[in-house]
Length: 300
Image (cartoon, rainbow, N blue to C red):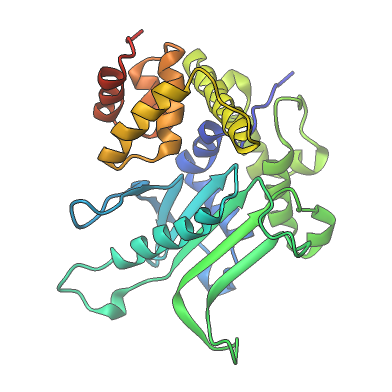
């Protein structure tokens, strides 16, 4: 009997959507507000690291980034926690992807749309029961007038109810997959098992499909989530504080995100290899070794 891992985990999310283009295409066509003539047929994965054009400017890393046959760019992120800064991050990442489409000598007519999709495991809009939020650049007096270029979709999983999205059955199945599949599940619900693509995605989340090192990385990610939750609730995080402070200072100097430093330090403390830490966090080997050397953490 299968035991499923949670697809919201950084490791499993990237395994499903960052390594299998057919699943990502099916997911995006279902969830994104694409007109029939804009549906995705082919994609090309792009680097998830968006480096700045000017030295000293901020870089950023997203979960999955791809481009379709028409040149439209899609940025997909799974976010466990909501902060006010996250909305700014979404705009920042999408804007950077939009601007970087052109070289200096190229004309503006070559620019293609950029779509940002954020799947949220926390609610951010408590004024409404709506779980699907689609933002664009519109005329406030006539919302039918749209400036094409940037669109943003935020989905609140905790508010999602499949019965309220009966008109978009495939999208509802994908969101149900993300919301419900996890360690406590040994058999897929019939409605998920009946869909070939989602059945394939669930198969990629089976515990037996991961190496011991990957399973350790999976657990480290949840340990970071629990630690972050404790901090957010006002409790002191013990044991990791000194290493995190030093590692954060190192990381900020190199433009690395705090979240990735936290996970990397915890993983290194648990004696994970540099290679596994790189795979878990998306950091390169140089950055991880920098944390090891300056944080005085022994290698396994």
